[in-house]
Length: 268
Ligand code: ZN
Ligand code: MN
Image 1 (tube, rainbow, N blue to C red):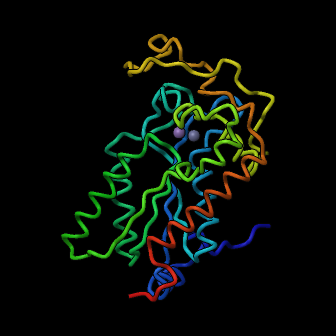
Image 2 (cartoon, rainbow, N blue to C red):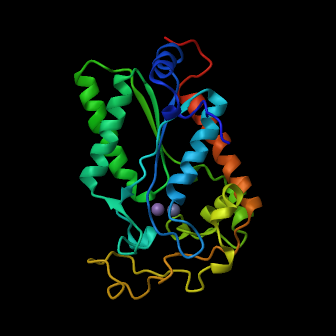
Image 3 (cartoon, rainbow, N blue to C red):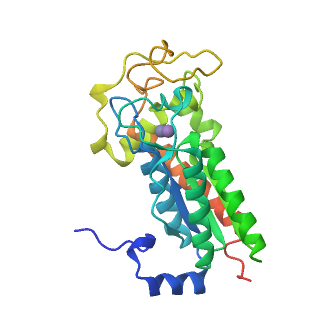
């Protein structure tokens, strides 16, 4: 039987939540994911599960809170996620994505949160998260709330050069080509091996794309797109590499958050 998790916002009752917001001014993490195909060997929730579990571990070390994830992301693009035409990939329009972020940020502001982290696991979301943050901050400023600080984090940007050499000894391909590649597969092998099937690794990779986009996105228009949906091989993935990367993300992000929000210093 699982027990109540003190970092999960939705498991608190509203009075506990109100008291923590007032008395502790906790950092609130909002994981932002996607429901997106990740090749034949991975489940479709990698982009939500990984940033959520990182957020939870960071929140445990700094007494923060983790909000329910934004589970759907902006439309998958062929050169970064295979494309939105794959069965299973289920996405939001730009407007819906932007307004979801804006609304959630403004709701947490209404509860008294002044320190937020948008923890993104799906690169297509980036500019729409930024737009949602910007719209929320403009409205909050007009309402006289000027002390809100928000971090937007793509967790994989915390990969160090030394880890890169260990994980990709033959050279790092690129983050776009890492869709369903070594990083995501390794982290999933470390955290949720029950959801990974290494016997199903794609053989039709790596992807090679022209340096431009073609629309509409169809397999006909994209003859070099791997039919598996994986953009590179994950055969170098191991749980040990996943542990190395996951722990680096948690410790690096915990440091950044502590520094940016001046945790440890007395609250104003
Ligand atoms: Zn992914
Ligand atoms: Mn993605």
